[in-house]
Amino acid sequence: MTRVFITGTAGFIGYHLADLLLDEGMIVHGLDGMTDYYDVSLKQRRHQMLLQKPGFTATEAMLEDQAAVDAAIDACAPDIIVHLAAQAGVRYSLENPRAYIDANIVGTFTVMEAAKRHAVRHLLMASTSSVYGANTEMPYAETMKADSPMTIYAATKKATEAMGHAHAHLWNLPTTMFRFFTVYGPWGRPDMAYFKFVEAILAGRPIDIYNHGEMYRDFTYVGDLVRGIRLLMDAAPVRPDSPETIAPGDSLSPVAPYRIVNIGNSDKVRLLDFVAAIEEALERPAIRNMMEMQKGDVPATWADARLLERLTGYRPQTSVRDGIAQFVRWYRSYYQV
Image 1: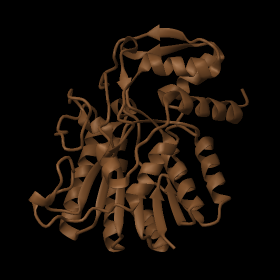
Image 2: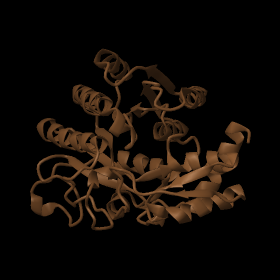
Image 3: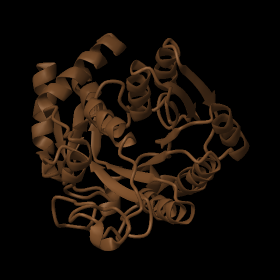
C-alpha cells in the first residue's frame, strides 16, 4: 500500500489531494503548521474531515521546526512526498518577507533532505506561476526562462526549484516541481479574490477590481488540479541518457531526474468574466470598485499545459461557470448564508 507524506494537509490544495488519495486507499500522513495567515478554524475543519477517513494521520508542526518535520517523516516512512506547505500569498510577501524565507526555503530544504534519507520514489513540490514574473510571452511554457520574479514570494519559489534540481542531480532523487496557476474551489482560501468577492457581494459591499478588470488568469478548479498532481505522482522523471533524447517541449533536465510541469487550464479568463460568473451563481450584481494595478501584480498569467497532458493524458476541464457554482454552493452551506 502506497504511503504518502503531504505537507500542508490543512491547506486548501493539500486537503483536496489527501482526500483524493485516501479515497484511493493510500496511507496518508499530513503535516501542517496551522498558521493564522487566514482563519485557523477552516484549516481545523479540513483536518477533522480527513481524520474521519481510514488511513489518515497528521502532525501539527511548522516547516521551520526541523526536528518535528524529521520525526513526522521518519515515522511515516513514505514512498512519495508531496510538499505543498508554504507561506502563501503574493501581497503578504510585501509586508512580511522574512516569513517566506523561513518557510519556503529553509522548510523546503528540510523536506528535501528527508526525501533523500528515505530514498523516496518521487518527490513532488509546489512552485507557482508567479516565477514567470515579467515574462510577457503567453502562454507560459515550462521551458521558458523564468529569471525575473517580481515578489519575494515568487523569488523563494524559484529558489526551491533550483534547490530541487541540485538535489535531484546530486542524489538521483526523482523530483517534479509543479507550477500552479490561479486555483479556486470549495474549501478555498479566504484571502483569495474570489472568496472575498462572494463574501462582499452577499454583504452588499463593493469589491475591488484591479487594473479595471483587464486582468487575465488561468483559473484552475481545485478538483482538476489535484487530479493532475495524482497522475504526476506516477510519472516520476528519469535522468536522460543524453540531452538529445529529451522530447521537444519537455522540461526534463539533461543532468537530473527532474522536471517542471504547469498545471493549468491552458486558457485565460478575463477577471470581469470571472466576476460575472460569481454574480450569476449568487443571482445578484456586484458593486464594482475599479482600481489601478497593485504593486508586484502581473496583468496576465496563462499556462501552456501540454506537457501535463503528454505525461498523464489528462487536462483540466472544469469551466469557470461550473467551478464557481460549486464554490458558491459550498460557501453558502459552510457559512449558512
